[in-house]
Length: 457
Image 1 (tube, rainbow, N blue to C red):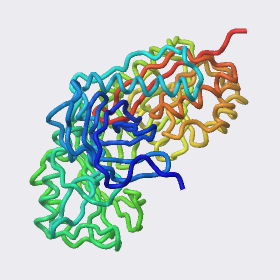
Image 2 (image 1 turned 180 degrees about the horizontal axis):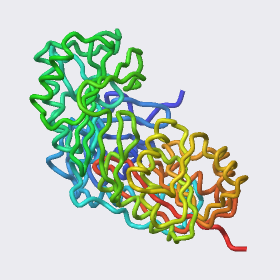
Image 3 (image 1 turned 135 degrees about the horizontal axis):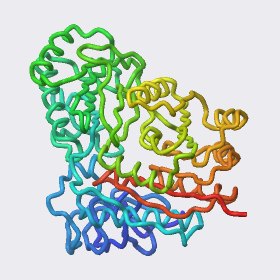
């Protein structure tokens, strides 16, 4: 058995030399990495070793002996510990550099493309209170119904009222709804036993429209006090547009169940993105940072350099946000999405926005694209915006087969992006440039847009 250079519960003085992609400080003891929360490069700290594994360990800071010039002193430890704002202790300009560095690293190590230009990260002017959606667990803590967030890697709820990265109005609504639930002695959910009444409070707010949706996620359909709760919410929050009950009976960490009940107002709220109106339901995917989503989409459209005669495919189109943002610049937009409800929403949104050149189909993108190709639809440009896992190899092959001049790839995971652009390179598409855009300030998440062009000859 190999003896490690550090032992659990040992106290050490270490120098922080780097940050992991999750924003943890890195110290090395005889080459053995220790990952340390709330520690920044160029800091010297006393630490307590919490856990040791074969190849790395974890420690927590006991005392700062030397601090980074980029440390934010008034950072809230609860927001760092829960992972809500794990980088809030790092000056924002340095967060943007850190995010670009993450992209540079994966382009070198995974894509093997060290020479591709990685532009400077575009950040926000006001990098707080930007989220238009909150999903807040409701649990019992010290004998009282409480809202907050879990400590990382645990089921321990930390009570929080100011979430720092959420719209202030959303924070205010969560507290008001929490107090109403307390008033009517609602039993909070117990995940161990799958008991209790209310599991989550979800709030969505239109960035421009200011419309508000409140969703109460309950374990059972029947809640005797629900009519009184709804009446009180309307009294306390008179500008609420929609109140829904979502029923999730399963013992699972999946937040929403399949059944929704409308308790007040509209089933959906409407918001505006790059001048177009979009309906948002309880389960719609809609970027949580509207201001920076507009920047991201605008940059993607600029990268594509669209022309009036162009035919564009909007793969993974969701409710149509990207395709409808550029529809007036091109001849036709073809959108494909596997979620039928999202496709129906995309169609309705196109009608709402007076767009007659947007066509949507439900199905796997690679299958639908092959059908379009057989029907003579040949795209000049394909926009892709997949989930974190990136693109299926079958999609990459199918999209390259349609032979577009350009592929614009929006990604929320630099690692899967790097893997995918490497495959595209093998099929004749070279990556021209990559632009990180900060949709998630105070966190380590990186969003980016990359432009690929077909190799000539």
